[in-house]
Amino acid sequence: MADVEFHVDNHVAHVRLNRPQGMNAITGGMDDLLFEAWKTINDDPEIWCAVLSAEGEKAFCIGADVSEGPERKTRMALAGGLTGIGGPLVTLRKPMVAAVQGFCVGGGFELAMCADIIVAAETAQFGLPETRHGIIGECGVVHRAIRQLPHHIAMAMILTGERIDAASAAQYGLVNEVVPYAGLAEAAAAWAAKINKCAPLANQAAKAAVLGRLGYPLEVALMTRFEEIEQYAESDDVRERNAAAAEGRKPVWTGR
Image (tube, rainbow, N blue to C red; front, side, top):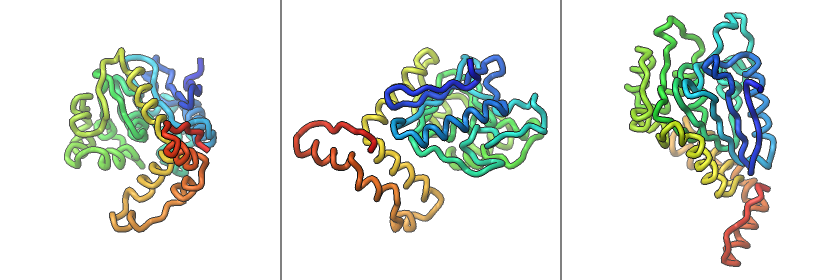
């Protein structure tokens, strides 16, 4: 079995970390496989959303496999192609759901925060242990944490290395849903199904607009014209939307 499994089912790409014996720490080889997965998801019009998960109850991912040593070379650093540390920023254009259990720390935490929706098992523990171990570099995880958590919660995690549990993560708005571990895959699949009820190109345009002006003042965002939204306006799905409304039926999306 590959250390990163990938398959597509009913317009959903499933990306699964499969190295539970190493707590799903990301090796250079896994990094390459993840990069290829993100590229395929972005490029394939039949893929409308993605679910990222991990094998084994103990850990979602503990970050980089440090046993490979400081000479370790990766294509896109710890988070397998999404964060851009050490390479060009790669953003997943399709919506992504992360299903998280056990330890989700360091680069693993960063990888989860790249998702648009996070479902956490009750066993999940989120943390940034870098400074506790005397490690800090071009650390994307801290930049994401300070944007996705309340300021003082994120700073406490960064400066102490202490973890928060799934219930606290939900309280702080980091995760969308907390479920028993046995129901994690089902919950993630349910979120993917909700996403895919929507027009896929509309979702992609909305995500592009949100992320494209996330760091800008509201006035700038409101004045911006987005290429993805304008392209969607000329799509088959817009014509299908109008036809379905006129005929009193539910639209059948094609993502075209």
